Length: 354
Ligand code: COI
Image (cartoon, rainbow, N blue to C red; front, side):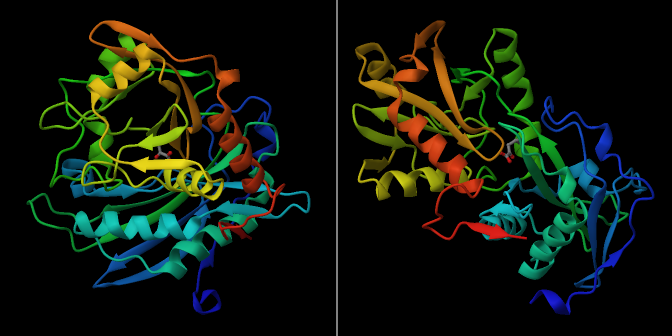
């Protein structure tokens, strides 16, 4: 696959890596030396290149800016003792990117462009992959429409890019979430399952209202009745009811999380009872009040396994049991971290070494 691709490489004149304090890396603010770019023109991907990370010149009439024809992915790399880059489930991100592209009238991105783009950047920016505890290398592939045209129609031209960022934890403490029963993130028939930029833009305002009340994030409910739990916007949500792992079933309005799938795979592998089904707000709140809900956590690439400290609903905060008592979420967090860092066997073939 890979050898046939021609990628032009223009290296940075001076690496910035020595300026980074790898012991204190904020999420998403520091970017590695190089970025990958490819142009979709006249029905084909061309001009594959790596250039120094930096600002770009684009037309003010770029439709992605006006109409949000823009999608992205997020995946993570780690470094093992031999200095190799270990990438977690990249082909799943590639597949999901094409599901998002299809929904957003964007072109199919071939596997080799996605994988070789990542591979080339890993070789150039290997020194940027942190090894400090709790840190990782966040890989952000994205695609946007690139016509110079502000009529409403699917673009003809597109740009695909990958930028990379050494990151610390997305949430540094257990999270406080609020069940949202007025605003809506996604509905049946909408774009909630796609990793489309607009899904995130539209969720900022209700999330900000919750943040003003002291919460980190929302738990979205279905857009029709606000009766069923959906996801959290930055992560899927999961609960342990007694000894059963329960998470909302996938549909049009929920992102098909790769961490979500990894958690479910491990739970089933360990013989735990797993249910993917509708969870009503009432069932959750009753479970929190009666103590049947033993654990609650978010699952996402950036968030990893984010313990939920409390869940707010109709003005009342429901506290979860202390984090140290949460057997499943701690076990799955440790297991995933160990697999990702190459410290434990990878029984599901998730890791790619570059
Ligand atoms: C991710 O987990 O990769 C996400 O996309 C969540 C967020 C940073 C937007």
